[in-house]
Amino acid sequence: GQQVMQIPQYQHVQEGEDFTTYCNSSTTLSNIQWYKQRPGGHPVFLIQLVKSGEVKKQKRLTFQFGEAKKNSSLHITATQTTDVGTYFCAASGGSNYKLTFGKGTLLTVNP
Amino acid sequence: GAVVSQHPSRVICKSGTSVKIECRSLDFQATTMFWYRQFPKKSLMLMATSNEGSKATYEQGVEKDKFLINHASLTLSTLTVTSAHPEDSSFYICSARAGQGRGNTIYFGEGSWLTVV
Image 1 (spheres, each protein chain N blue to C red):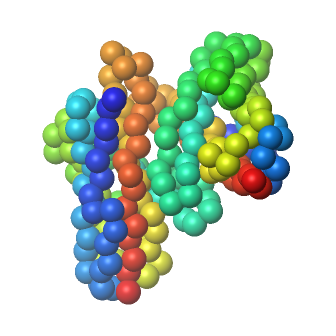
Image 2: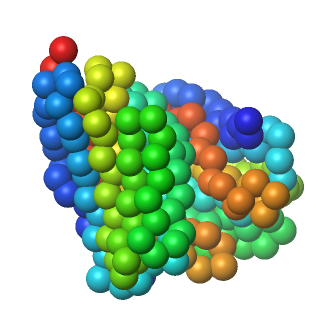
């Protein structure tokens, strides 16, 4: 099955600094999704990217899908303490939309 | 928005007993639901795909006789951990796929913490 590699595993930043997490696949992805899981919580859907080279923004969050549809990134500008959590990328495949998750990046923000 | 409800949120059971976890899509019909297991500070590991009206599709290495999945209706899937052992203690999460009208978006339940003592 398809695999998605996600780095870094952990990232600690000062409030106000930027943050980026990256996902890579050896195979071309039909789409990629991003989720946020707060400590003790469940994953919450953030966005889905489908088109090659696609860039989407949600306030301070910028999501990119590579031209070859093999990599993706999530960038947060000027982090806030509310951004704390684990960010997962997930690739969807097959007719049943099964998700394969990356290992996640745990973001901690020092106020 | 769409909501997926998972129950119970926390359960403690004795070793050797069975425990059932329910996953319900509250305002949409889900022909496909997924069951995941998550260890502390780890990623989500897909256990099985639950299809309404048919047998679940299990991922490699997941024991189907131990983790029984039943998708009896378009809004309910259940996971039964049979003859539970302490190593089955984990966070179990379900998700449900909404239809084309909602962009096939996948919504997650709140998860269930299982502790086997």
